[in-house]
Amino acid sequence: MRFQVPQFIEVEDKIFGPLTIKQFIYLLGGAGLSFLIYSLIGNIFISAILIVPVMGFALALAFYKINSKPFINVVEAAFGYYFGGKLYIWKKTDKPIVSKGQSAPAASEFYVPKLSDSKLKDLTWSLDIKQSANPAQNQKGRSNF
Image 1 (cartoon, rainbow, N blue to C red):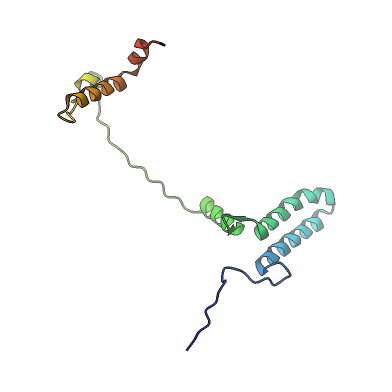
Image 2 (image 1 turned 90 degrees about the vertical axis):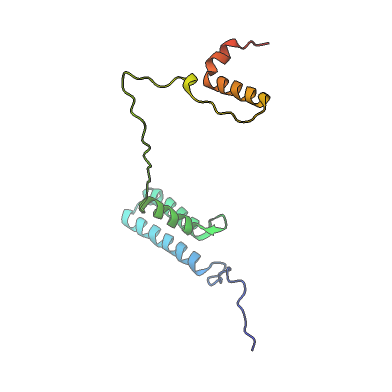
């Protein structure tokens, strides 16, 4: 028994001329809201200040796509982010308490482990450590030549 498998399911049907049902509803809602704004205010110049953003939003909902996804998905994600719950996690790290009589250990008091048996590698590693431990001293001793 053979079954027909639907194809092109991502493409919406064009119902109102070149518009899909969603596009038509978005444009119809924008036009209705614009008419309501004009009816309440009365003056075309003052109401145009409010009508232009409403129609721009309706046009964006109907036709604008971001990364080949409808604009309504971006609006929905924005509302979900701004009004949804957020979880902030802070992991406290305990620092040792240093009394006034004690000072922080100097750089020479730290144990420097041996990385390898090669003397050249040990020498370059110790030079890098001394350079990063006191970068101001390295700037003084350098010449511009």
